[in-house]
Every structure is written in C-alpha cells, then in structure tokens.
Image 1: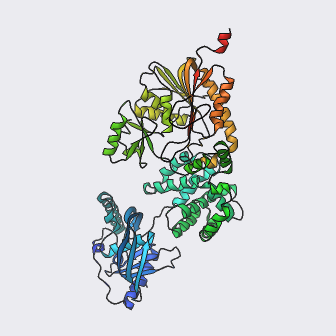
Image 2 (image 1 turned 120 degrees about the vertical axis):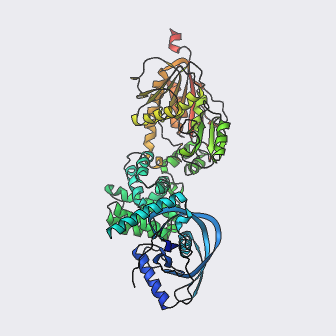
Image 3 (image 1 turned 180 degrees about the vertical axis):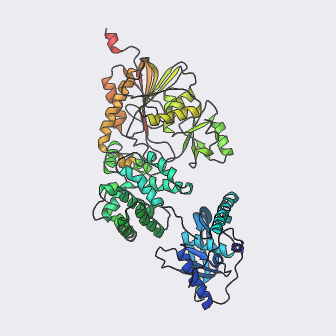
Length: 171
Length: 444
C-alpha cells in the first residue's frame, strides 16, 4: 500500500474522462487500497482515481469519523430521484483550502460494482448523495469549481497557481 | 471531497458563553463574532447562535437530564458548546456524525480538551435516547412550551386566551419589514423598485409606509438603502409616527431614542417641525441614531442623557413627546431569543418603576394641550396598560385618549399588539394629553 500524490486544480490531467473498469481483479483492489490510504491521510471523505492520475472509473468514500465505513464504487452510475436542489458547501482534495456552495439534486439512486465485482444498487441522500455526485464528476473530468461562478473559479485558480509556484520554488 | 475546516462550533460557544454569565446581549455578541468568522460561515454561525438561545429552555432541560452534575462556573463555555451540539442534532440539517465530531473537536479549540469524552458520550446518548428523553420531559411546561416557567405562568395569567399563540409566535422568525421614506418616495413607487430588483414584498396591513418582504435579505441589496429611501423597522414600531399627529412648527421630544427608528419616521412624516430633541442614555447606542439620521438626511438635536432626569433639559416645553420606554422586550422575543434566558421575573417590577419615572419626568416637559405617546415592546400589562393607569392615578393633568385603530387589542388604556405570524411584533401604545390648564392653577 502507498500514499499517492493528489493532482491539484488547474492540472489538465484532472480533465481526463476515466475509462470503465473491465475486470475487478487484484490490480484494481490494490488501487482501491492505495486510494483509501491516500484519502484517509489527506484527510478527505471521498476520492476518485482521476485525482491520483489513474483514469479508471473507481471511487472510494468514507463519511465516518472513525474511518470504519469504507464504500467502494466501481463504474458508478446514478439517476436523480429527487430534483429538489440541495445546497452544500463542498471542498475537494484537488482544490485544497477552498469551500463553496454547490447545488445538486438531493436524492439519487446509485448502481455500481463493489471491490469483489458484485453489483451495488442503493439510494443515497444528504451528504452521501453530494459526495457521490462530486466524485462521479471527477471521473467525467469535472470539478466542483465548474459549478460555481467563473469569477470565483478564476480567483481559486489564481491562488492555487501561486501556491504551486511557491511550492516549486521551495522544492 | 473534503469537509469544512474552521471550527464554527467553538466560535458559537465562545460567542454564547458571556450571555450565560449574563454579560451583554446576543445582538452585541453577534457583531464581534461575525467579524471573526469566514464570510461563508456567517449564516450558519448566526443560525446556530440564535437557534441555541431560542431553544435554550429545552436544551437546558435536556442537558440537565443527560449530565450527572452541572458544569462549574468557569466551564460555561463547555455548557454553551453542549447546547450548540444538541441544537444541531435536533434542528439543523447537518449529518449527525459530522455535528458530533465537530462539537467534540471544538472542546480542544476552547482549551477544554477534558470535555471531549463527555461531549461525545452525552451527544451519542441523546441520539440513541432522543424520543424517550422528549417523552420524559413533556410534562415540564418549560420544556413543552420552550419558555422559562415564570414567563409561561405570567402569560397564562395575563393572556388567558392568547398565551399559547404568543408562545408559538415567539419561536418563529419575524418577517423583515421596511419603512419607506415618504419624504423621498411613495410606498407604491418603492414597491415597484423592489419588484424590478427581484425582491418580493407586500404592503403592510396597518403601517401606511410599511412593506413586508417575502424573504429577509441583506440591506445592501435594497434599492436606495444607502441613499435613505428606506429603513428596516417592524410594522408595530411604525405605528408611533401616526399616533404623534405631528404638525408644522411643533417641538418634538423623543425621550428614549436609540436606535432612532421612530424618531426618523416622525421626521420623514413631518418635515416642518420647529425643533426635535432626541435623548439617549447609552452613548454607543446614540451613535446608531446619528448614523440613521445621516443616512436618511434628517436633523435632530442629539442629547446623551437620562430620560428619568431633567439635567439635560433647557426648560422649553415640547408639543409632542414620544416615550418608547425601556422594557422587558417580551414582544420581540422572536427577534431577540436571548430574552428567554436573560430576563428574570423580578426584572419586570424594576422596569415598571423605571418606566413610571421616565413617563412622569417626560410629562413635565410636555406643554399644556400637548400629546404624549407611550410605547413599549412588552406584552406585560404591568409595563403597559396598568403602568399607564398608575400614571393617570398620580397625575391630575393627564387625560387618556383612546386610540381608534384596527390594529391590536383595545385595553382600558391604550392598545396592545401581540406578535403575529408574518406580521407585526408585540407592542403597546397609549396616547395621553395634557390638560390645557393644570388643575391646581384652576383652583388658585
């Protein structure tokens, strides 16, 4: 197991559309283990493979404080059950330090494969629905900052670019 | 995805802790807390602080049941933090695990790391046993009606037909109401400006210059607010202006003026006043009057002074006097929920004595034939109807003028407004006139 580097906005690699996983094998399970380790270390409550520069449709999620409710979603799909807009202040490991309100449908039905390749089919609402939609966005090359105004997005871009320059200078 | 990082619960607890020590008010505490808070968290901080004070009677009863022994005086911040935690679990749409862990982490921020285990255990027990706890507490009126017991008793006694409605309205947010500056723009024209700005509003039922907004908003989005086209003022407070029956050339005294809403309204309605004196005891609050006068481009002589003494008075009598007396503010609990916690039953008697002193003192400054409007934002007859009766009994040259109006409930003296859903606050008005010649002079 290893902690992987997380790509940060505006890295163009975050815009890659991830490919479906064809077979859930040990290689995928090793990726999942790394993703959990990376996510818990960050710390975050959700991670898409895209964020560690692996462009496969794999998500890891854990909303618990104790890190004991891991959820793996492979090739996830969702349909909206309740269009009622739900506002949540989202943050992202690829956009560190910034939080903005994002409005998304509040209830969804999710279908995916788990780490053994078995089918998952469940209904999610509240924070879980927010998190799953946020992570599926990553697999499609989208970030939460795409849901906010261009003004705010550009401000975040400028600040992160500056941070990256400073980090490069001190590296 | 990540979750927010600042610990808002710690900030909320340290904002509320001084109130638990009976220091300051929620409004004054909020001002400095909001300044310390990230803009994105301000609405949530405000919701938590106001919510905790609104549900304080229930939260206190719950924590009493859940704790083995009460907190020490130096740990009232932990007590506040526990209330914040319980409030979130019951009333906010925050996922419970996040609410609990944030509250537990806040103990560390407050430097009370020892309380982490306790906060965690108490909140988790609340989660598990919530329904049983609620059933157990239902028999206590202060829990059931979410008000301090003395307040419930007093309201039951004073308002046998209305007390439940009052208690219910106290726990609903009052609407945001505007007063249009009719010296500058008509109410219809301003309503149109609001519509053009996409702000939904409707004319008030009773206040002729009033508009009630469908949703509260920041004043900065109101058209022409900075230029003085409009002010924020509850509908009940706007009824004072008309009762004064101001005419050109008159001298007006506002004896307890801050923050200056009724004063400015009077000046907007009658631009031809000869002279206006605004008295306020608290210099800090007097600044608010100055700001309002300036924004609305109105003039008044501002005096920092005590309305129950005359050391600031030049001896020239007034044609009109407004006494908006210091009071229990029990008519505006929905806007100032900390009153539930801060006010004590024994305060009412002391307030009534102060009200009588202010009223009697201001009365001496009123010209024979002049008119005095007495107002409070209290719903206790002790400060209102019965206070005016006490005054009338001891004052020979005072005559009570019944108010002919379609608002409020008529009392033996004056009219009482009770807080209304989507309508006005709780308020009281009485109008008194001074006999043209005093009785003693006639006897001479």
